[in-house]
Image (cartoon, rainbow, N blue to C red; front, side, top):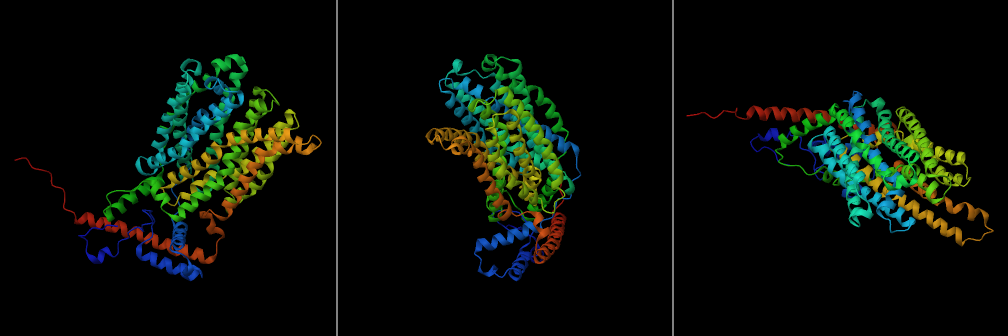
Length: 568
């Protein structure tokens, strides 16, 4: 790192240059790093035998634990409302497509069979998910490095409104031919780009403005609002199907839920505009400017580069993706694919009845989610609640598909409610858990949450409808091949395949949250040696910040005062 060459030598030795972990920012100093290595060597007998990257991982881990906590939270209501309102709107627009996938498939892929229409429709759905990681990088840079969380949310609302309205007005295949589905894919990709930043932004701005005692509760409200978007989408599509004939819905009625977004956009724009910027981010921006001035830095690498250049953060990111795999997969199966499964694929009930049942399950899930979010704030370690819920998901997912074979309305409803309850236990404190993983550096927290969440959603959520549909047709093929006398295998086991896939994801999540991801709450149950090392490092970090500010003041005093030009 460069320093001001005009500064005296005795002063430059006291400067607190940031450690360059691929441009990663920490509050450690060069001289403190030597002491940190000594502490690690004393407390870890295997430290001397570690590779260079493993030692760096250890150093970054201690730096992660010793970072100052966010004490700027004041439970600002507008920050919460902006996240809630934005989530409802964004996820309403995003979910409408999935709930109308059958009608959209018929309108834009009419030459395909019913099976291919559904698969093509879900393929377009996946295209939007492929854009979400790109949106995460884009909005992460905007929210972390450029204009802050608030303006990133405003931009995301504007970005999703235009494609939604255009999708509602887009002529079908009968009018524009092959160009119609191509334009549909492009518009859907722009929606995915917007959603890639919206949910992460709502998490970060709401939880950074929360006090430590309410992060889980406020995070669960943000999560519930995204589910509320699905609930609103389910309600609107149910009303359309109730009051219009099937022919009218297939012809033009499916467009109405997309056009409904025109009524919501102005309201939500006004709410987000009234929100305050995150104080935690603003304070870090000021410290960053001081650090850049002291070090004479001329430019910065993108936030995503800083994120991926750190071995410790790469491990955190991988563990976060694995932990979230179950939530994203189970969520989209339960609230998006199940109504299609019950009505179109299995024919157990009508589409309207499946939508009504989905509405009840979503409402029940929201209540459970907010309750479990409040409970997560009372746990010594937030991940303990997650580890309680994951074994429940392992059992509940295949159980749901088994209960569907009862061919009764009440059996299908209870099946969905028991899976919704287990998912709420896992998801209740998940939003706060995600943000806390990255809160030690507010100039990377938006990017960390957005990239991790959206990669998991793309890999496991975006592919879930296609995977579930594929497993369903595989189960149909298995049923044709088995011996009729094998009653259990023929009637039940193949039907469990989509649920068993979720069980596999839940097992992976349990491993990741238990053994891969590090969390600030680890200190509460850690060894006395680690706590002592962190306390020592915290004292050094406070002293380092004071020295940086003093150095900036000294340099400002040395600069010549500004003299305006004189007119001769």
